[in-house]
Length: 153
Ligand SMILES: [Fe+2]
Ligand SMILES: [Fe+2]
Image (cartoon, rainbow, N blue to C red; front, top):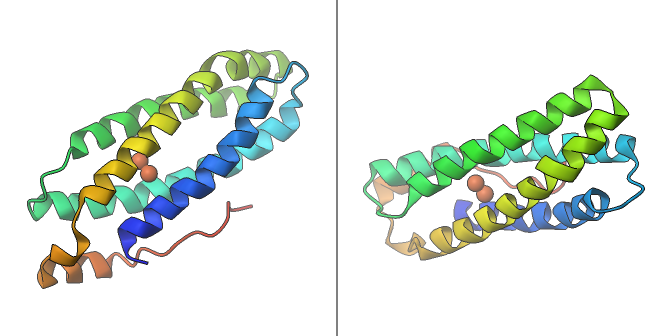
């Protein structure tokens, strides 16, 4: 798997977890403890995923690959705002605050996250990996992008 494929595979993992998150988000009897646990795990995974993505993007950008990376950065910013709000609510430990954030911010986050991953998949698929020059490839290999097979506990 090349690094772009690794990132796309991680999207698949995130999609699976987001299905569960969505179920909780729209459940009338959500268990806030389960929600908090899943959200924290997903959030940690997402941090690692974004870090890999941004490092790779920086190199591709620097090497002149013309794809819409501004959009990726912009959306990471939006997602990070939503995640911060949800983590803050979780950290408050207040059931009502957590339920409120689930009903508002989490639904939005799920929509943005799915659209974001879909857009990224298209961007990554548009990069012709076999045409990347050897010097750039070496820089990319130094990033040592490895797949995370599961969410971190
Ligand atoms: Fe991303
Ligand atoms: Fe991504």
